[in-house]
Length: 118
Image (cartoon, rainbow, N blue to C red):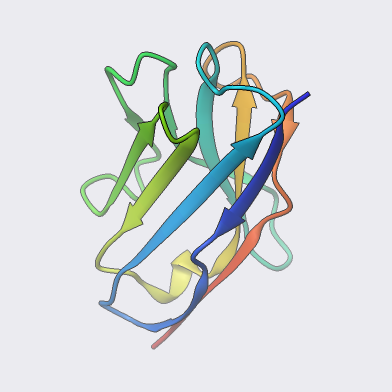
């Protein structure tokens, strides 16, 4: 069992930056692909970014490509999402998720709120 806890959300002005963290406990994240997803009010949860367990390639939704960066530190059992040039449409609850393959989610965090004011 893996427990995931997100942190780093908050209120930021448009154009600003935030760095989200997802810390795991229970077992190591090695071997798991990690993803960030988000859900805005009244909308379905959507994919944001993913990184395989090896940390090689990274994958992004078109809406965040060039602005967001996912990374992981397996030694710290933590995954990060660096968000730059934030827009009001980035406002959402951000979740991290772990799975045995990209786009497959087994474990979820509780989410962290990101609010971008225009």
